[in-house]
Length: 257
Image (cartoon, rainbow, N blue to C red; front, side, top):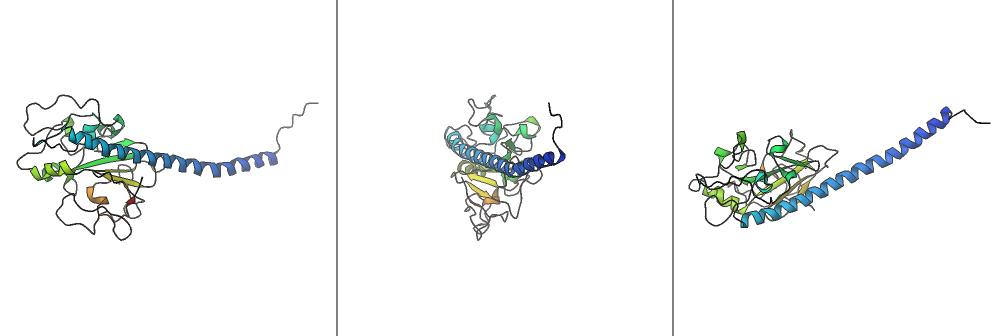
């Protein structure tokens, strides 16, 4: 005869316990794998930006003082989102972004809410160049995509070749890019940094946390050594590394990637 009794309560509870046990093992492993993949993608993007910045600079896409030495670009310039800056008052400002773009669309900054950051792989990215204080609302005498002339949909306001030459020269020599988790589970537990030397650093943010839009990197000096700060506000300070050489954000930054 056909048995229609089904599962007993005890049998169902055993199944529930087994499923819960498997989930307790599997879910953390999945989350760790996802975070590891996100962090690996971030490191790859940082390396890509460092390489493409060098190509952008040598291609003279931006040469604000027309001295034959190019400046590094913002994410919105390298990703083909907005045209490159040219000399202030220059009549032939390009009407179109670079093509082909140096970086993928994923690193557009206005698509992330126009707050100067790009969102990709569970992380936010902010790139800093040297600037003048009149163009800047952030610490460290630097500016990012939001403060570089694209407010209210405008773009192309370059630095002045006469009054801003020191900043232009620093833009020729230096840039720095930070990446930090957008969502803790989708991203990871570390923030990352790279500069013109291609040196990638990471921090577990034990002192100063960065997460999403609310608590982000607003000072380009975060990963630069506070101990080695020479006080000139330039970009030639040593990078932080280790417990006894913390960054300006008081976090411990270590080589990564």
